[in-house]
Amino acid sequence: MVLIFTDNEQLDRDLNKKIEDSRIVYYPDYILEEQQATTLIATIQPNKYNFKDFMFKVREKNIQVILILENENVKELKDALMLGIYDFVFDPFDLEDVYKKITNPSPFSKVSQYIKNFLELDN
Image 1 (cartoon, rainbow, N blue to C red):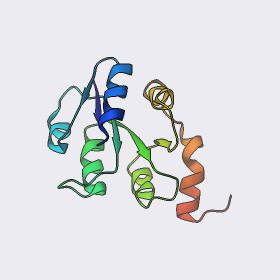
Image 2 (cartoon, rainbow, N blue to C red):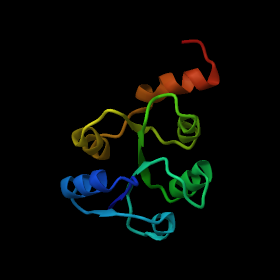
Image 3 (cartoon, rainbow, N blue to C red):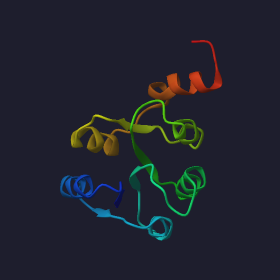
Image 4 (cartoon, rainbow, N blue to C red):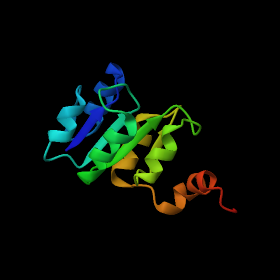
């Protein structure tokens, strides 16, 4: 089950049409209660949880998270990486980019550049 939580009605509908066994979600509590979810496609959006706490709870359930982000400079990227979220799609993107992440998650080597920057490691 793929849960879609983007806060963008058109994007939600388009993703829902493209992805089999998907459901649009409007409340974060539903995501935390869902027992069959394997993947969450989400944007950073205000809810009763702060981003880091919410994503921690999602990752505790071993749900793959695909984040749709504005760019590589959003402050939440560091928190996401530290929580083991390695699947990102940056604006501008198309539906195929998101769809590919479901079946082809990013390997560590693909996101290591971001982690090196945050940890200030030598490249």
